[in-house]
Every structure is written in structure tokens, then in C-alpha cells.
Amino acid sequence: MKHLIIVAALLPFTAFAQPVNTTNNPNQPGYVIPSQQRMQTQMLNQQQQQQGMLKQQRESQNRLQQQQLQSQINNNSQRVRQAQPGERNPSRQQVLPNTSGGMLSEGISNGGVNTQQQHMLPQSQNGGMLQSAPPSTTP
Image (cartoon, rainbow, N blue to C red):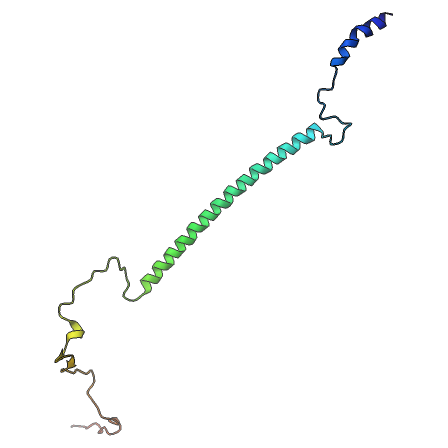
């Protein structure tokens, strides 16, 4: 009888005795072990961090590669410019006035007709080498 009184006294409190976590019942389909869920969450976070780090590395490598390529292009362009005849440092090149006229005005008068002819070699006739006289020997 004593046991019956204790059970009757505790009976109203059984209505409050519900499982703490009703969504994660091992008898229901889709049950996830809490430790496994924690591990999956940690792995997902770690994967996201690694992807972020890889993205940053890839961006910095791309930036560095672009800088190196641009530097190489600039160096090659400068080398090509320096190799061009008459193009040495065009920014520092000083243009001097042509006061004497140089080769353009030398010996030209009478409306552009050349009145003064200068030749490096003496004029010769066709076949001049065949008709040349033997060198003379003088005692």
C-alpha cells in the first residue's frame, strides 16, 4: 500500500517527463549521432576555410604572374625600341636645326638641277678594265 501511495504521488509528474531532444530520436528515420554531426560541422568549416585560403593564394599568384608578365613586356618593348636605328632614347633626343641644308641643298640650283657632280670613283667607260694599260716600270 505504501508503494501505491508513492506511485500515485509521482504520477502527475510523469506528464513532464518528455525526451529532451524530440527531433533527434534514435528510433526515428534520419537520426544523426551528435558526435558525428559535430565532426561533420567541423570538417565543413575547415573545408570552407581551406577553400578561402586557396582562393587568396590563387588570386595572389595571378596578380604576381600578371606583374611579372607586364614587367617582361615592358623590358622587351624597351629592348626593341633601343634596337631600332635612330630611335635611341627618343625622349632624350635633341632635335637640332638644319641651317646649312646638308646633303639636300648641296650643289642644287637652277630649279632642282644638279650643277655640281661629285663622284667617289673616276668615271670610266664600259669595258674600261679590259682596256687598261699595263703598269709602267720606271727605273
